[in-house]
Length: 481
Length: 140
Image (cartoon, rainbow over the protein chains, first blue to last red):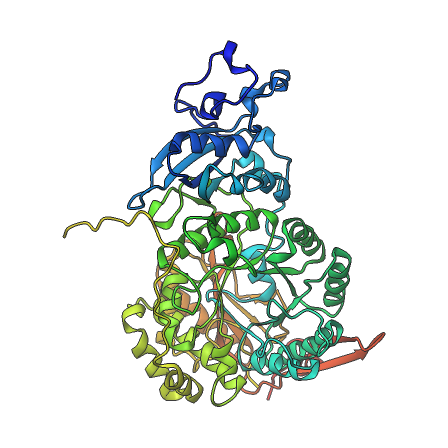
């Protein structure tokens, strides 16, 4: 479809978006443009290019009809431009649409403003059956308007004095119902046994069975006791998620005053609240953990919503230090190729296009600090070789059930995880093929470490072998030997 | 108690051969190695004494082992750790850190609680050993 001429472009009435200037196949994206990739499923009979142009239009300047007031602006600049539409491999009726947005469409340093455009109105658009935001590319100039992670991987490790190995954590279970005193007991046992962190779960805030101040006081007693017992810096992610910003600040300040090195929030508090907490965390030398509560409502299904890698990008810009980003081997959704894309997005200084990992653009991170991914959900000591292989070193491995459910108790569970971790890192550094030899390396250590032996015995057959729903559209072709 | 700072403190003490392999891992990554010692193992003691400079431009683990041995000989009852340092842009921090020597007896830490407003407590962690002046700790 060709663009309308100047004379007929502003005739009152309805005109296809592609003709209104939202489709520019010859457009060469500028380094300063924000780029998006959408997966579009047009309604029957809707031309994919028109659908792409409509998405570009509705996520930038357009409305459903021609308006003469466009002529009061440099509207060619402000129009988003769909510039490339490709069929999705092996998926009938789906198209990848690349769209470029001029930088001036967005307020500096505001995820809320960014998302109001990019995912604001357009997902409910009738002409498309389904729409998914797959990836975004942010220009350096724009990234420089964001604070980024309050602490970042490097500074977090220096504050914790923990280097060269993944960090270990556990979420306190049961996640609801414990009194403050009993809750702190779990924290103390897990930290003394060898974990670096324990964690509130996403839905523990201030309920009748345990009000927040009580939890904070007992948890910090446990943290400090464990620190004195081991000589290590320890932490407990105190969830400060609450109904209002004022409540969250009050809780965060109390956590800080008690000496907590870290607080946490849930993704459901919203982008603006997260940015506010990131600024607070930077100002107060507190690490900010983010639990991705709610994300699967829109990130899991392949045809509609948004890919989690986009959440990773936004959260790095918004300024969190930790984010749950998948385990590969645990109980929650996670295809290894996709997870690699998430982890690279969080941890690298720049990432290149990698279609098999779902990265559709080159992305330079403009020295924004790095986010520590958190692997949590159905993992245990017996998988340590796989976890180290797939997830690398800069990650928090969280064994909730895999610590608290240990037959010899919580301290033993924590010790089993720490020993399994250290023995695997040691083997890796010695140049051993730790992925292949992993089970044997763990068995050897279990000979002198009875908690590890019990852990391996208890969870030896546990796997969560289900197909992932969010998988790569591009699978690398094997090179013939 | 056992101070469990460092990457391998939950494992049995590393043998010299095992230490050499970890040093070799650092060197093969291009990470200069340094040796540090202290008799103040407080978890937030960021500045252990440096055993000379970081060993830049070294490729042979044996030379590092020589320095580790010399430090152990001079400070047999101190904590001694070996650090690998990654100078890569965007890292520029310690990349591996593990203890290679510790006092025969580790008395651990006292937790001091100062009662504050409400039910709050101000916590202080204090090493029993640091009741004595630097250099006179861990003598027996």
